[in-house]
Amino acid sequence: MPAMAPPILLLPGLAADAAMWAAQCAALGAVREVQVTDVHFRFGTLPEMARALLDEHAGELILCGASMGGILAFELLRQAPQRVRALALLGTTARPDSPEIAALRAQAFAMIEAGRFEEMISFNVPFSFHPDRLQDQPLVDAYLDMLRRAGPEQLVRQNVATAARPDSRPLLPGLRCPTLVLCGDADAVTTVDASREIAQRVPGAELQLIGRCGHMLTMERPVEVTAALLRWLDRHCPVRR
Image (cartoon, rainbow, N blue to C red):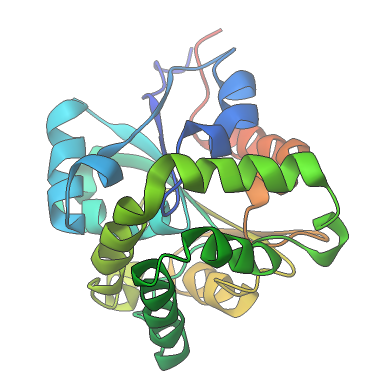
């Protein structure tokens, strides 16, 4: 009989909350212990966030990080790799900011400072979803409402924390936990190339692309993402029946 599986800790993306994991929480929570963290709202730097996660959650963990959540997972792996039983990285990157991304962050900061927060978050929508989904108003509204809940101050603070990250690529060859890399095939924020780079450098990592999908894959293609996570977890971290 397999040993009890560790809890699954879901790490949201920048300015995102549990709403981005709603479908996965419902499906995974039916058979496993699942929690969504909010440390990115409570602490100002990635090292502080990672230390808080380790302090607040005892024992081994299964980490599922999306976008900024994946970047946070890398920081946690720097601090306590022995605590990570398995790792799922969704729409994320191990690279530091490119000049293009840095320019987009600066543009967002300028718009917020000018009182154009609503305009700025609407500007992000085409970067966040596949073109096929841009007319799905409930989906777009759910995304925008999530950013409104975070608000401009948190959006700036979390961008600053993310931009300060180190290059995580040197970390990847030393990872020994089962690793799944998921990416939307049309991700315009953290590209397929960034996900493929992670999968190629982590020993034994699995890469799966989600078809006709952009950056917000947990919300955009919840059925496909949840199914991929369940299959991977059942192989590498089976629960006691």
